[in-house]
Length: 439
Image (cartoon, rainbow, N blue to C red):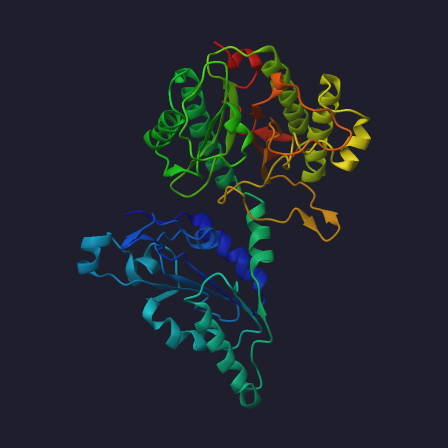
């Protein structure tokens, strides 16, 4: 039978060692209705998965550092053959203990009656308020009972705390197993990008290209796309989160594809490539493509321990601004354009984000006034772009855009893991040099 990886137990031990007499209540995700009695495909809560590897809805995990024996407790849906005919296999309480390492497991219906006892003696309770409406009233009720007894017992949890800082700090540094899974997600995602570029032709629809990529994900063993695939031909690429994917691809336009797969254990790829639909760049397209690529390569070279995500962004931004000044699409000095934001009608987003179990993964970028320093094991995307359209007004003092540049949208995105000496580009198998984009 399938058994959970030992890595989840290692993570639980780390969490329990940092709780120091506190208790943590971490719920699983619930099923979400799509329409009528049809539900969306289930997607486990990332924090819950990180600690348990348990992939069923409506469960709750307790982490009880103040207890000697029952330190990891799972509340789960019990085995029910009649229900399993409709919805599939459940592990039940026995499986939660035998396969997932729980010290003890109970039916989820017993959470309300047992929670008070399990929280008894904890100095504080860690629970994310506002995210789990079915569990939150039970946690608050149990905490209230503890407080009501405090005058007689002499002890009660002193606070309700958010577990995010503690747990997300753990998740931000990927362990070797996680890095291998992210490499696999990047490998499958890169192969799909290569396939899409090889097969794309004028007259195809954006939806056809999306289908090619997502079929490739599934055939390679992934769970499916990690997010709504962006397949944006021509001017559609200037809409950052374009997902309708309904237009016909035109001869002479570029195609921007921002897509990645999600593995069975939820680790994600996130890659963007842009290439000419007919296999040949126009002169304007190639000039802007080479500029975005130069910006991205400089930013990737800046990914290393001791620097910051802000510094990576600033590196990419300066290359873009200086290139746009050379092309006449901006006017002034690079410092002035950056300081005033006069470039934002052409480049309006940051250069990357953390990547892991979530596509936009957890972890702080800043702690107060101080940017977070990059450390080995962190994984981030590096994705500068340029978007030349009439959607945003040209800032005062900047030149109106010549029609020959209009409708060109380019983004190049890779997944990079911080290493001891620099970075590893996990998605390097997706080609990006200009000549490789042509045929």
